[in-house]
Length: 101
Image: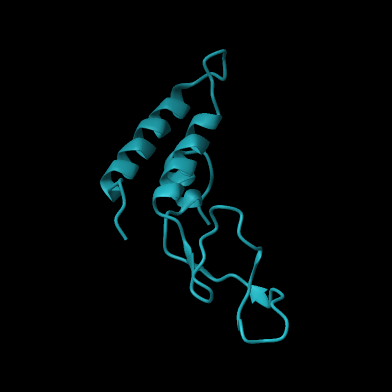
């Protein structure tokens, strides 16, 4: 998969935001949403993919996998197994906004 952003670019943004959030006094210039905006940007560029059905969590797909198109029922049968892609929790932890783990 080709992505617009390299790992080093994402790490640079996390470092900048970490410095910013460390020095902020939660005054009028505070914007807690800026890190969330970067999370959305990077996640859209490198989404996780379900190893069972091949869908991405972007675009409002089903909460569950639909497997076995030949089956009489096309009801969701199991939860997605997301793999790869951008890790929002790791990014927010690097920004100093969330603990990793």
